[in-house]
View 1 (cartoon, rainbow, N blue to C red):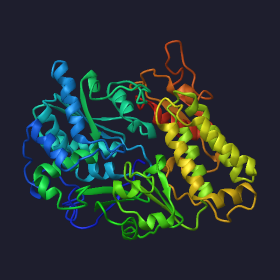
View 2 (spheres, rainbow, N blue to C red):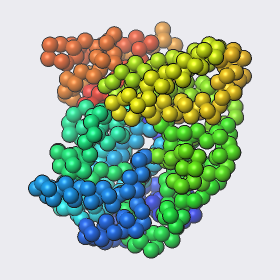
View 3 (cartoon, one colour):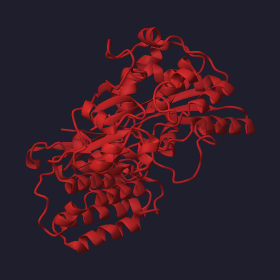
Length: 490
């Protein structure tokens, strides 16, 4: 998703996006002019504030922030008292740009929240994990604008892929390991950055904390629902980031972005759930409302599907991409997800009702067997699509199809979906940057047709011919390289 800058909008007066009506990026001086100075809060005051406004993680799981603070405090008390704070700004979800919007346009609000928590905890280091080079530069600029802050404050760039945003993957990457899920139930509050008890939360969570610290609980709760106070950032159609009070009708937000529910709306991104048009018209932007339809907002991706595209083809595209985003650590991911995509493709091209039965069988084979949540999330996406578009899947399986083209509405990384020159006209090479390569060897697992390793586990060549048909696999290898040591060169 590198290079895409989100369009910004607000329902009502902005909080997180305040100041952007005047400037494209809020620097340190403008930030203080718009928001004022940040008050310092003791740990007990910060916990009480987070509880009073029911602040929850905005990265997907919705875990109460006050409980995270308490868990880190307990772990630190049982050890030597040292802690760390990590901001998850990795955003590997192709349909979500809210972290990007915050870190590109209002980075100081995120830094405020992270430093507020670090001061209360006495944390010695604050690290922001990101994946986009433009976001990394924006955060570096913001850190430089602040000057000394009394503790280590830095940004680190990790590989841009779907699973990087998983907590254990992010921490592994920040600890100089592969940015892949660990598959083990180790809480960051017990052992995170450099082995320290770590407060790990999403970019928007820290920004909301900075707003709440300035407003106080009472004024913070003046906007939004009484049970879910404040505003929420959502990404609509993979391009527009909207700040809206909780409780606003979903269709109203869609209308402001120039669209409607269409055939249905995918809420929560590619590990989320499809709402049919009737549910979408009844739903509000809130946890409670979406829960009545069995959905969660997750990382805030809202993806409407217009009437003129084929839902079966759209779901197949995403499933195939998700299969390629496997962490490569377990059978349900490495083998199960590609097989699931294959069975969907068979059903989409007239494989008969037996092909649809095969899709359901593959879903059962993948679910609850993975080393991380990626197989389950992908299978839930497919199962929700089968339930939302049963007639379309059946028409395709029986050979008649739906008569609509696949327009590629559901966002995927542009470098894998944009049609380039014909294969016979494209001459490319996969290049290794020896100053970065650390010999992780993940590239050969993904691209054995091109990469060969020497006895020490490093590629035998710095420049390798890349056949056009293997370009998608090469792009996955580039994103998965923990050291960012690979690139394609014409």
